[in-house]
Length: 255
Image (cartoon, rainbow, N blue to C red; front, side, top):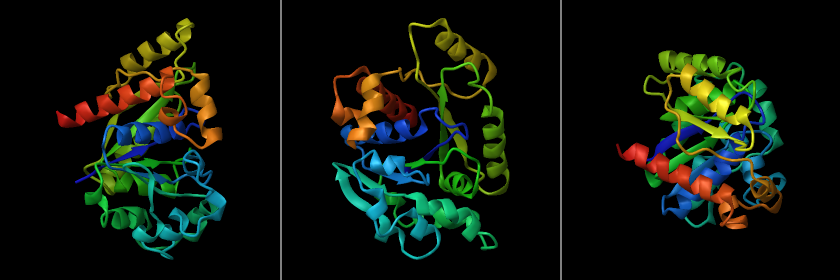
């Protein structure tokens, strides 16, 4: 049975989509069967794999509205061991279109239930807000992975995210847990990055991944080429970091 992990933080610009793209690619390179679900209307996880998000017939939007089945919108073999459910800007209207729909929080879970056994890991890239799409992802998930940028306001909003996760656990998904926190955009040249890491470790009781994702120009360039970093520059520090994160995740889930 596949593990379903939402990658969520309502704060934008924290490396959430970068983590979704590159962690999924790293896991696939380690011979794990992966499904990446792009649940962000910006569709950056979709284009980050070189897919033309604006010319795809069936996306998560059609899935959420009941216009196609989960198998209809999976794009198979985007890379070896790697499938994607794509997204585009149409998804921005889903929140409004789902108003009044019964059990709307369970739409994604009920669809994923059909295919979860086919994968080792299903990663969901959530939008940078705590809306119906994010709640759907959390209801469908086993755990939530929280990327945190190494900057002054890192802890801002995390308490709200944890509150939302706890609320979803209480009311909709009693088995939901936090997978852990992963630090992104770490700059070893500054004291601030290390201070942020220490501050979060002191103030959060959650698991903190040992692997830290550094600031890396190759990591920033990769999406514009439609490639994960493991493909764009496999020797870069960014690629090595995401491979290490994938290995740490696999080890953690064996225990």
